Every structure is written in structure tokens, then in C-alpha cells.
Image (tube, rainbow, N blue to C red):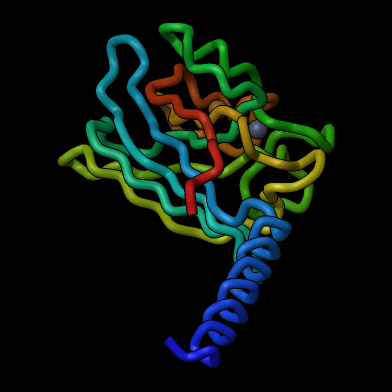
Length: 176
Ligand code: CU
Ligand code: ZN
């Protein structure tokens, strides 16, 4: 092997190490919640959160969901251990705002509106949210994610009157 080859290899290794280190410094850019049904329910799903320039892209896929609209929120505690997921606590609200819809200027950070399921029980939703982040007091990492039995009316306090919890997950940093 030529000396030039080894120099090139060493330089490449150093550049790669620096790139890797700077990646780590940038922090979490993607997270995921695996959603499991609460007792007596069948709603399963996966929700991914990806930080983009314009905000947080949220992609939700569910199956086994009763036909219609269902409130969808980030809750303050990443704990789905209770059979009814009451262990996940109330809506994630680090800014002490009233409950509202996702497009309201004043809302719980966790207020993500509704997800609609079709007659086969499938529910998909994709949107970009301006308030969700992976850093600081508003970080959604380690929080709970809940799909409710009923629609969120986007106005009733403090929960939107969305009823019981049919599916629960914990938002965790995704492995790159
Ligand atoms: Cu909720
Ligand atoms: Zn709320």
C-alpha cells in the first residue's frame, strides 16, 4: 500500500469522526411513539416526529380505531401503565395556556386536534406543527401520546371533552 493511500484513509477517518461528532451535537431530530391499546380497546399505531425547518412533522398511522374523529394529544407523563392510561396525566402544557386546537395561538403544546378513522378502522394523519420541539421546557421527549375515544371539540376545558383513552404511547428519541 502506498503512503498516499494511508494518508487519504487517515484524513477520511478524521473527517468522518468530526462529522459524526457534529451530528451528535445537533441533538435529537427524530422521535417515535409506539401506540398500544388500553384495556378493552384495539387501537394500535405508530407516530413519528421529525424536526424540519418549518416545524415538527408529525406522521400518525393507526389501525383498529372506531369510525369517526378522535382527540389526539401529547400528555404530560410518559407512563401508559394504567389500564385506562390515566397514568399519562393531563395535556402537556408547559406554557400554562388554555386547551384549544392545534392552529390556535394559545393552546396546550400537546393539543394536536383530531384524527379521523375510516370504516375499516384505519386512521392516518400528517401535519407540521409550529410548537413541538425536542429541546428545552417544551420538549416532547419522554412525554405520553394519547388517542381518545371521542372527538376533541377544541374548546371545552381542560380536555376538549374527548372522553376515554383508547391508545397510549411514549415519545422516545429514534435511533438514527
Ligand atoms: Cu388527551
Ligand atoms: Zn389540551
